[in-house]
Amino acid sequence: MEEKKINEEGSEVSVEITEDRGKNGIRNKKSAVILLAVLLALLAVVGALAAIDYDSLFDKVIARPPVNYYEPAIGENIWENEEYMAFTYGSMLSVNVCEDGFFSNMYTFEDAESAEEAFEKAGKHQNGMSVLSDYFYTLLCGCDTPAEKSRFKALFSEEFQINRGKRQLAGAFPAQKIYDLHFDYVGEDLCYDKQTTCYVWLVSYRIVRNDGTVLNYSSGLEHGKARFYVEQRSDGGYSIKEIVGIDQVN
Image (tube, rainbow, N blue to C red; front, side, top):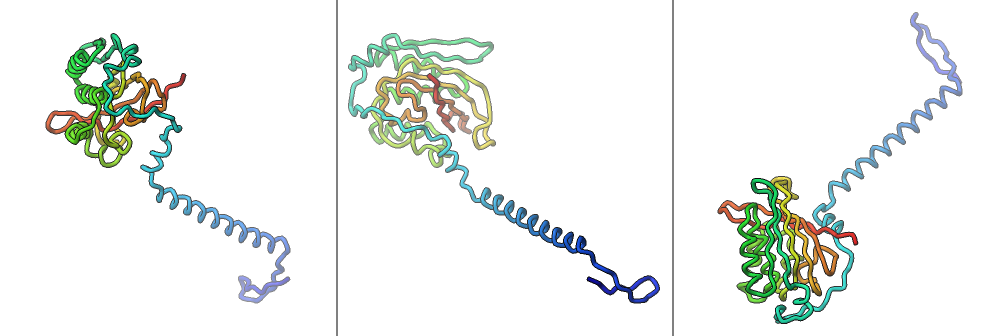
């Protein structure tokens, strides 16, 4: 096959096009098409990633395996429950904090009066411990009336109430039979929004016949562990900004 071209002297000459040259041209066109297809595929992937609702995805990722919780014991006086009292007699409530050096304060409770006193003393520690003490003491007492539900909800930040508290703030709940609580202060860290600096506490607990109405962020029925992020408000008080449940390995 020949092709007409003009040489340096201005004369028309014939140039033969070889078979290899033609094949190279075809190969180049195929490579260009493949490259274009790859680029289009990458653009499609980037577009798909941009459209993902990451908050919903986060909820699905941290979703716990289904657990068969006990039936809620509505109206029960837990201090008259023999099974719970067998566990909670002399139950410990410990607070490990770093205040001028590492130390641990321990309190015990075995009835309603000593429990109130223990949680009140624990709540006097710094770094947001007061709101955690109120939170777990409310769990121990139960939450039923509109006033109680309002006070419980006020323990959480506005962002948590709106965006992340669907399970934890589901509504009323009976007294939770919790015991052997341990509060370990981890330090300051950024919360999930990467903007707020929070006090971080690692809390472990045990519970008799967990009904799942509140303590459902860890899959353990008889024990649980969670990381609490606590922020200080402008008025000097504290709010729970995030709860991250931790599954324990038996």
